Length: 287
Image 1 (cartoon, rainbow, N blue to C red):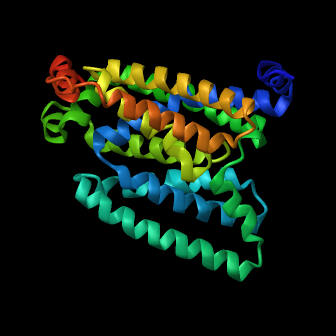
Image 2 (cartoon, helix red, strand yellow; image 1 turned 120 degrees about the horizontal axis):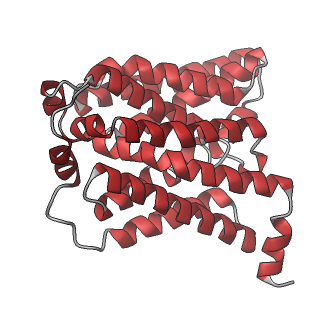
Image 3 (cartoon, helix red, strand yellow; image 1 turned 135 degrees about the vertical axis):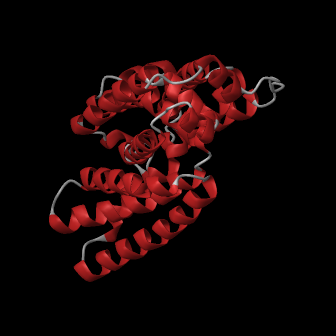
């Protein structure tokens, strides 16, 4: 059987169809979250949220609730809780380090004391793209609509915030509320991607497309658009390649996204700062 025929047969399977739809929905929302991570320079957040997600999964297994839902709620609460510390990247980094240590310690202690099988909890961190359920698709669908919608609605405020927090404050941008919302979105995105690539490989859906897009776009809108386009292309190509050669989709997606990011970074960087150009065009906020 040819490779194309093999892929065609696999695409008739319901789990494979769900996985493909999930990746397309993820590509519409999660790369936009990556733009936030890059713009606010909050790389440690995603690592901390992986550990918080493990704690949520452990709680879910202990009390008999959906582990992914518990992970999502735990991440959302943690994202909102650390928002007051996000005035500077250094302040947030320290908080994330503390949160990461406490979350993983609490998760391991909870799993040990409860007698719950830890294999299931750690398996979710690695992801199982063919185990995507309708409820997971619903969550990804909400993110696919809500995240780009928020960026379009508050694009001027976001451009100012991602460029310069103090400038945003002086321009009347509700910095604190917007920061809380952005951190919650980052946290929920990590939890939402658990069943696709796993929390440990979530960069394939969030950070890597955003890093590539930053080299291609001049404004927040163009960077966001490029991030989504790259996300769709990488997810589609990586998933089809994994099906064609019977490879684990998660690592293939990461390698595909990484290859695109590296290739784009060979392009000479534009002299005009992307955030500066976006913020200059935004002007003072009217909100």
